[in-house]
Length: 230
Image (tube, rainbow, N blue to C red):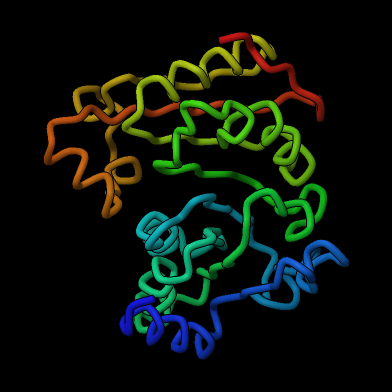
C-alpha cells in the first residue's frame, strides 16, 4: 500500500464526519446511529438523502451546498476516495454532510425503516457479468425499499448505457413509476444545476466523449422485486 494511502487512512480516523463501522459490527449488530441520524448526528428533523457509491464525495458535497435544509450522507467502501470528500466537507464547514465507509449490502444495518427520503447512485460499477451486484438490481431495490420513505425517489447517473437500459427493464418489470429518463443528459433540457454536478470520474468520461445517462424513478409499496431476464 502506498505511503499516500496510509496517510489518508490515518487522517480519516480524525474526521468527525466519517463513520467506519467494521464488518464484524455490521454482522453482529446494527450501527449505533441507525434510526438516530437526525437526532444524534445532524441535530435536526431535515430529510436525509443518501448517495451510494459516492467515491470522492463530489455529489454529496454539491447537494449539501445547494440544499442546506437537507442532510446528505455518502456511502462508499474505498477509504482513500472518501478521504477527499470528508476533508473537503470538513474544511468547508458543511454540517449537513457526512460519510460512511462500508459496503452498500449493509444499508439496512446503517439506516432504519423510512429514515431516508431520497437515494442517489452516481457512476457505480456496472457489473456487466454479475447482475445481482448491480446497485439497481432487484436485490438492492429490496434493501432500498425498507429504508426509503413512501414516495421516495431514486436517481441513477451513469456513463454505462447497458446499466441504464438494464435499470429501465427493472423499472418496467416491477411497474415502478419512471419520472424521467435520458440517454444523453447533457444534450437534453434536464441538465440543470443539480444534474450538472460532475464527479471526478464523470469528467474523465466526458473528456473521452462518452454520453452521460440519467434515470429518476420511484419505488412502489413492494419490498420484493422481480429481476428481468437479460
